[in-house]
Picture 1: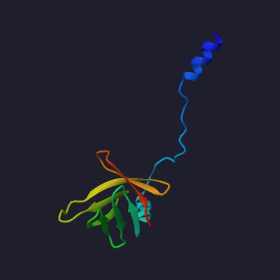
Picture 2: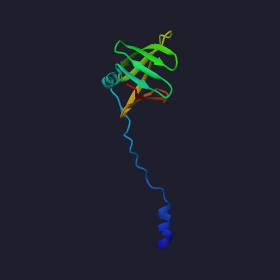
Picture 3: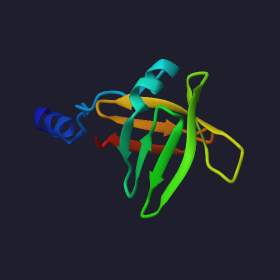
Picture 4: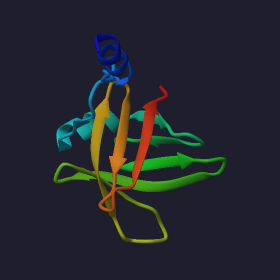
Length: 112
């Protein structure tokens, strides 16, 4: 019976403890500090956030837009559209992520 119990206990999955830090929500001031005059690298592109409110996204071809912080969210606008899209932001170590209203997530790591 003891051997059976030992076999059952050994077969159970052990809890996995992640060494990764948790994602922390960012305030508007933290978003501004995290992005201003910084470059992020995404999987196949980069983006620079200038203090002027301009942003340069490059995925092989440069695309200029605008960015700002509103109510603890990062917002961007890409001409010729005049619509602004806003995202909540989280940080973990040297990585930030943009979280859209529909749950879409884009992660970027500092490249500068």
